[in-house]
Image: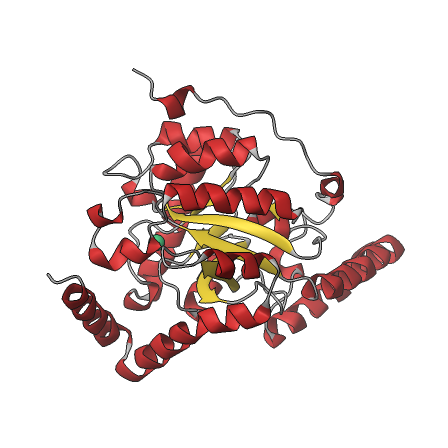
Amino acid sequence: MLSAADQFSPKPFVEPPWAAAFGCLAQMPVSHQGGSAAHSRAVEVRQKEIRADHGYYADHWLNRQTILQRVKSQMPALILMYHDLSEDPERVPAGHRPYVLATSTFHRQINSIATSGLPTLTVAQWCSAPRPPRALLLTFDDGHVSNHEVALPILCERQLRATFFITVGRIGTGETMNWTQLRALHAAGMEIGSHTLTHRPPSTLDDDELRYELRESRRILEDGLGAPVASLSSPTGFFNPRMRNIAREVGYRTLCFGQIGLAADDGDPFSLNRVAVKHAMCEDQFEALLRFDRGAIHRLRLPQLVRDLARKTLGPEVYLRVRRILVQKGSGR
Ligand SMILES: [Zn+2]
């Protein structure tokens, strides 16, 4: 028998008026987008080659891209990171409970977003087009079944788009969405991205293992959806330069981390900051985020800076072990 969520058929998505500008940069190779100093030099060399090969029109096109790139860097986005949506956080392991958001809170937040007037895009759209000022990007990590049952209906009803990052090795197992549900998200205009194959912390993998996780998860998603996959999110919040390099190498166009902050102030689509919407976030904090209140974002970032320092001091593996022990003690287990 079909569940209520399976029977749900989304309204057709109406493109906002500024979306017509998309497409002109969507075909632009990743190497033409922002990045490190070495990357910028590589871009310059490539630009010279294009100018030499194609003359006046290429020159005109490249000048336009450069101007757009400069404009882009002054237009940060707020990328919100959601996980499971449920009224019962007790049923998940203690370490994951802070990330389980009550369904009623989620509905309230989506209504606030819809009435805020902020342009809401998928990650791939935002990274490949002239960026509207103060865009809001909704992302969901892990692929929990509530993303389909709770998030999809209200997102479609409020005409909002989102990006869903899936742990590909878990598709159809436990409480992770199956292929039918993933295809329903895709058909409704949502972006599907990779959250790696196994969700192992990238810092515990060598380059070959990491490359396999990134390449295989993308291949399986593309085969299953019959559509290209452009975006990736890291299974842990910490920025990882190896992951950024390998993501670019194997063909992704964007990479989100969980480092708290506004996204891509520096224009690099491979180190996008996000803000996790956790169980403990109060309504005032959420409303401050929608105003792009940098003070509120700094306050949310402080505990992460402390954790980052502990991780650098202890090393990633010892840090993970200590964290696990503290979480178990905190839950009384
Ligand atoms: Zn995750």
